[in-house]
Amino acid sequence: MANTRLTKEPLPFIKGNNEVKPDARREFDNLPDSAILRPKEISYVGSWSDATTWRLFQSGRLTRRKLGPRMTGAMVGEVRALLKGEE
Image (cartoon, rainbow, N blue to C red; front, side):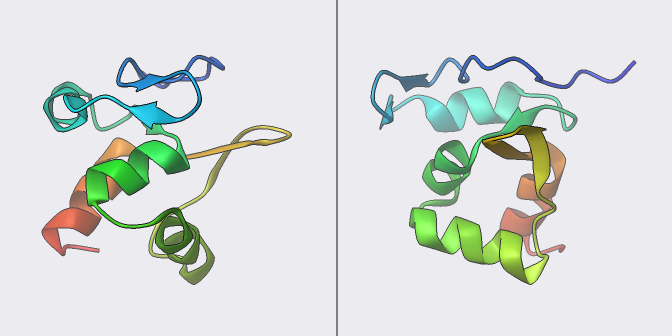
């Protein structure tokens, strides 16, 4: 049974106007590989800029998942593999 996030709600560690709570890394470790992260969340977990996250999507190192007409994300498992250098 796939456990994907297809709702428009952000993950618990994102609040308000894209401010990220400091416990994002702890929450990231508890997410299943099939969960989906939004670009802002990926940037925070990876400790890089939003532009770098979009470059990763454009280069194909992260697979872009369309969640809606103006909503994109990536699977947690892919982000973990990228962070470990397993691409």
